Each structure stands twice: as C-alpha cells, then as structure tokens.
Amino acid sequence: MSYNISEIVSNFCIEGNVAAIIPYGSGHINDTFHLKNANPGLPGYLLQRINHHVFENVPALMKNVQLVTDHLKEKLTGIPGSNPDKEVLTIVSAKDKQCFFCDETGNYWRMYCFLKDTKSYDMVLTEQQAYEGGKAFGKFQLLLSDLDSGLLYETIPGFHNITMRLDRLNKAVLDDPKNRIKDVLTELSFIIERADQMATIMNLGKEGKLPLRIIHNDTKFNNILLDMNDHEQCVIDLDTVMPGYVAYDFGDAIRTIINTAPEDEQDVTKIELNIPLFKAYAAGYFEYAGSFLSDTEVKSLSMGVLLIPYMQGVRFLTDYIEGDVYYKIHSPEHNLQRARAQFELLSKLEKNYDVFDQIIHNTAKKYIQITTEIK
Image (cartoon, rainbow, N blue to C red; front, side, top):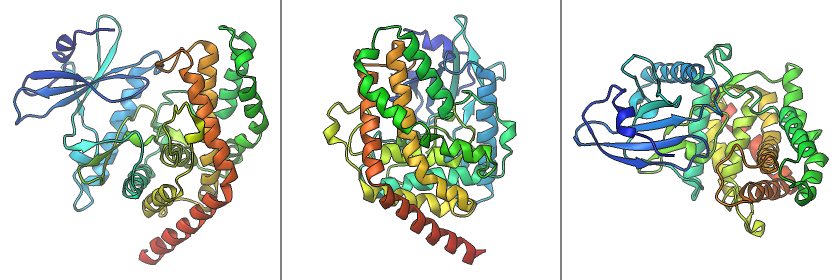
C-alpha cells in the first residue's frame, strides 16, 4: 500500500524539512519510515503507521505510550549520568496537540524523534550484546515497577493468555477455513501434550502468587537499540507495554537470544541453544531486576522460557490455519515454518531445562545478595 507521506508529515510539529523517506525496520505489524532532515543540524524522525486492525483503540494505546515514556524520562532525570532524550523514545506531537494523527482514510500515524547512532539486531551475536539486552529490559522493568499497572489500557486483550490462545487455535481447527489441518496434525499433537503445563504462570497469577507488573510484552532483541559500542541505550516498540508477569518478558527475550537460528528457520536441524548467551543475558537482567523481584517471580522465569516459544508457535500455527490474517508472510507456508521452528526450539529447551534453571537460580542469588549488601 502506498501513502502520501509528505501530506501525513505536514500534520506533525517537526523542525526543518524532510529530505528522504526510507522504509525502516523488520517489524511484522506496523509500517515504519525513517525521515531524514534536509538540515543536518536538525533531528531526523521515525514515522509509523499503527496497525489499527491489531491495535483497535489507538488513542488508548498512545495514552499508554505517553504515560510510560513520561514516567521513564522522569525517573532517569534523577539518575546521574543518564540522558532521558537518548534512553527513552520522544513522541512528536501532531499539530492538533494529539500524540497521533488519523488521516482521511482512517489510518493512524505517530512520530518519534529518530535516535541516531544506534543499531539493533535481529539475532544476538556476542555475549556482550546479550548482557546489554538483559540490562535494558531489567532496567525497563525496574524503572516502571513503581508505576500503577492499573493505569494502563490492555492494548491487546489476553496477549499472553495461553488459555485464550489455545481456544482460538481450537476454533481455527474446527473451522479449518483453508483446508490446512491435514498438514499440521503433528504440530497439533505437540501442542496438546503440553497444554496443561503451559498454564502454570497464569495459575500462579490467579492464586495471587505472582504480581501483575508493567512489562514490555514483546521483548525480541530487535526491540532494543544499542549504541555504536553495543551498549544498551533504549527500549523501543512500546505498543504492548501493559500489565503482565515478568516471566513473559524474560521468556520472550530468551526465545530470540538463545536460538542459534532465525525464528523462521526452515532447516530446524540448525536450531541449537547458545547457553553462554543465555547466561550473559541473565547476568545483565538481574543486575537491575534483582532489586525488586520476589522469590516466586524468580522461580517463574524458567517456566517463562518454555512458555513463550510454545505460545509463539501456537500463534504462528493459528495464523497459518486461519489463512495468514495477522502476520506478514513471505511465502505461502511462512507461518507454518515459523511454528515448526518455535516447537523445535522448545524441544531443545525442555531437554536442557535443568541447565538454564540452575543458571537463573545462581545468577539471581548473586545479584540479589549484592543488592542486599548495598541496601
């Protein structure tokens, strides 16, 4: 779909003029453009079309983003050596003073200041990157730990509700709109065998043993911007920031960090576990998160490591059965390929559960002890 970007940009309060419009990023949901400024002394911008079919209440979503970014900037302002304008996304207001713009076709747009001299990775390549990723998301959770989660709107209801995800899969199986069930019987059997176990975190929450916190809910590694020296700088893609359990964020980050292959790897024999990257991420994460997590939350992280690949596989398979209505695809079986890769990753994680569970335990113990001594 083509857009009149110049016309859309004219509705925002920018400095200077746009010299170039460049498609940006590798996200599945929104359309993003980097706007280069004609004046090199003025900022560049990031323009995004928000997918209002996925995020049905864009004004509420943007209220979340505004609330979270304001809180993060306020907290960082009080920390010596911090630079809130570099470490937190800055929303550019529309000319009507809203934090978004709705065009005449009903598409919603928002704009951020472009953070130059940063980079992101779809795959983690070094232990340093993994460590910095852990720091980024651990600090993100810590800074938001004193913000009332009840203030945030649930942008995608039940986003990490595995019961709801399985219910949707079951409906898709019954409807079979594209006659694809016959090709995914092995995957469906894999899902059914693990369904009860994967409700563990939700059940702990219902029992009041896990607190609802404000979490990111989509902690792929490419949702962290690193500086040119591979140090963490800014957590991005805040559309799904809402109440949840910390194990969701930890599990999703590990899902992308520990995998030696892309999330849609077709040759599943290439999928192995990079345990040193896991260990490095855990060290960075607990450097911040160790100061506020409860014992039960720490224990839940290992289950999160299993749950998120399982849930992501369920989501990919559901979309494949439904006819690829949610995720962008590059081939007719792309979603099926993604699901199979997630289930292979889960199988490897299950075989090594004791290894990463011990890493979590030892790392948490180390950093929680350090935090206690400082206090």
